[in-house]
Length: 472
Image 1 (cartoon, rainbow, N blue to C red):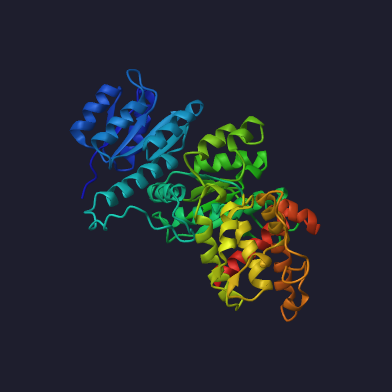
Image 2 (tube, rainbow, N blue to C red):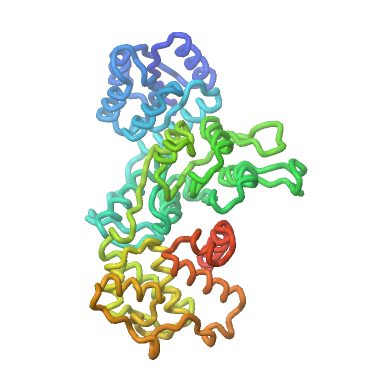
């Protein structure tokens, strides 16, 4: 079946001629317009599957035209074109429903790749839809998430709506809110779900090794490069590259990342030629990215390139009853892992969990529960099983009339060595590290200071434990 003509709206005659030549040489039919009025008339007549739209038109803003196109034919894929100085307009267009944007100048391969993928997805969207599933008021949480608060339902809806898009997703939220889980959910909801999901924590890798981790290197490119190493961007080809803690990235590497986003090519250290890859970027930070831009620690042009579809994960303290749902689900999982008999929280523990501020969010809650499960027996988690820091926080919340439990009796002692005997050194190390993180309110930097190690060491260990848990 022949492809219907594409519609191109570009007011600069020389650029119009260049784009037409590139498209026709690639086998596409194309109809051109020089103004918004001409473009709208051609759109109504042709009903093109893909529109190439310059945002700077002489008679009307391109953003207005975009909205009209999508109102007339929501399935149309609109690729917006703009100059580098107008990237904020392109970001607004993406949020309004544009499929992709190209920054002038762009190369022929990038141009044709955008058109090809837009046509492919447009073709899939035009196939007869499957029967609609039963209407439900509350979406099922994506894999890895627990909770039904209104804040999280909004997050689930956003994940479902952006999943099939190619747009870059920028996840923000406090440490421990589940940003990697969110990134995995976006990947799973996308057309790339069968491709690789490659996470890279920019804070866990020394700055002098980060470029090699992202883009790779050839053998002998630098001291210690004993073999060729594909970078994360190449490993993620056909899938999703998740850049966690993106605001920790060195400014020099930010420049190379921007070029990668603009050209879809990677050049390993020591390589003489770049390589084309097809990767979707999802990134995350626990900082305020705009504040990082204002302070000069994050490139403004990179921010606008990445911050296309934002997803903000709310802190645990704002999620109401979710904290108890998460705790109950985690308790069952941890109890099975540790061969304990826990199956419930005591009512006073559930009440305390609802009132705590949880500065470390879900991660802190999981650490607290692991502490209780490892050092005690079930079937119920009681107040005296919680870490000392939470006992003190309970007293602060209760006010001046509160009397803490006596030091003797059933209160959890600082160390219960008999519960560690028989466990491997690796298991004991995990218990100590997780317990320290829990005591420090979920803060890895503070826990690293207590343990006299670098924060990147703790990041790497926790990532290894998470991979082990997923494999198990």
